[in-house]
Image (cartoon, rainbow, N blue to C red):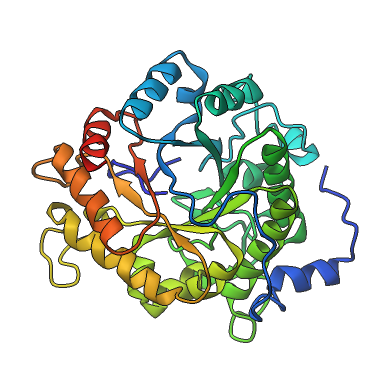
Amino acid sequence: MLPNTVKPPKEVCMKLSASFATLSALALGMSALAPQVQAAPAASHAFDARGIYLTATSMAIPRFYKLVDGMKAAGLNTVLFDAKDEDGIVSYPSQVPLAKEIGAFKEGPIRDLKKKVDYLHSKGIHVAGRICLFHDPILARHRHDLAIKTKSGALFLEKHKPAWANPYNPAVQQYMIDLAKELAASGVDEVQFDYIRYPAQGNIKDIDYGFDPKTHPKHQVITGFLQRAQSELHKMGKMVSIDVYGVIAWQQSIDERNTGQRVQDMARYTDAICPMVYPSHFFGTFDGHKHPGDEPDYFVDAGVKKLAKITNGTGVTIRPWLQAFPWHVSNFTPRYVTTEIHAARREGAVGYLLWNAGNKYDVGFAGAKAAR
């Protein structure tokens, strides 16, 4: 997930019931490319989720109740919170063995997750838990065998630190699915996967993927994981959504090669795709526009339209992340947010999510209220 600051924001090995070879085939997504009938989730793909992002800290402190009152007054109906963030911190006391082994939840501030979920439900609010998947510094640091390696066998570093778990490793995939199922069992209505990709920064040419990406493209691994995760969560009656970069909608081949995100395939195994179409994050002169941050109508409209075209026929819902922060915006007002919402709706988006890393939503709430 991209923040509202220049700095990027903060993913016992399980005994596997199948052989490594069998799970490796799942990891590679051998069957992921053939369209299959999806099990119906409890909530409709067309659910009009209008919501905000909350940090785990915001979920744990008294300010939580004020934010809930504010979003309800603005006509919003969804809270998405950090269940596992970009640092690999699990926000609640997880009972998943690997999370306990590596101490992933030691810094997690939420001690009463079910109580908070129940409170949100009592207010008629749809609850989604965000799991940052393969960007997981805690896992990479404590379990080198599960981290992405270089061709020399050293740990792959991003900003001079190990940060990425290996999406191809069956134990890594199982860890993420176990966390998702545990979260689902806590009562959330939806699990949203972020960082469902390979690294795009650092010396990625030196990565040993564990397979030859020329013969088994990375997107097969990512799609295969999503197929498996969705199957497990649909059995529990939960929705599945994924975050993708907004620029993915422009279909630049280098993005797919680096990240492993082939959106047209991933769309078959998720209920909602949430592109991060923050105008300010289309850097420099993009698509002929010199100041993207000041053009919310164009970038939200174009991003949703392009992604809808790419995923046409899959049945997936487009639910964009919208900018609710002032970075690289010359005049950030409620009208800015209202413009984004109108642009998304015009192109057929079903709902939206507002992102502000500090959870400061006064402007966002006013913009959402005006858009009702």
